[in-house]
Image (cartoon, rainbow, N blue to C red):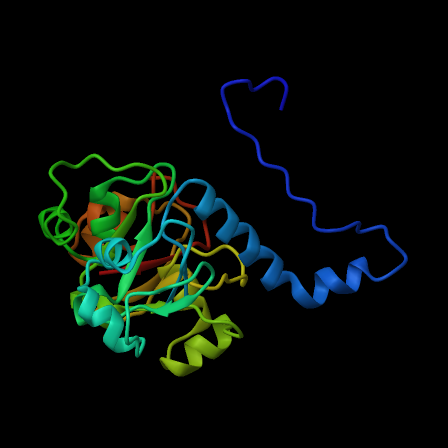
Length: 249
């Protein structure tokens, strides 16, 4: 931390893992609450809207008007869905976020993201993504919250508490390995609110790379393009490994 003077550092102390008392059990049994508390604190610190599932947590300085503006809804919609009879709200109060069909999914911009990359991830055009988020340019920053049009809602799934790859694959009648391959997952670990792509139809097949294969050869074999294969499999290079499974469009 001393060697990175231009970066702001935050330290979080949850407990002591070598404790022989109750710290370990507290962490094990309440890790979700501890993790959510950090997210909430950081979002409040950087003055960004804080959501937990379908709720907004009121912070100091909020008004119904400012919250409605952030959520891109009307004050009336906000009051109606929360059964509010006045404009009075209190810090820490949970407000239900009015659901609109066009506002079902959001995506938080990460390091390395571009509008093209995000649009490709959800199968929409850059222009559509820009228009839907009222963006004047293609410039985005880490932490930006982008709304994803519902034209893709049938092809994505938002991970909930208790979900596993097995339960999700069973729900959508697909194979676990297929789900991992489609989402470029290297383990079975999932996080709450993680967005998974779900194949809406079997318009592709699975191919296992053999010795001598390359993307050009495979693309020609199946009558598709290298770019289409890379996009479907989230590949960032043309390097393949023997035994690697590829989804072929």
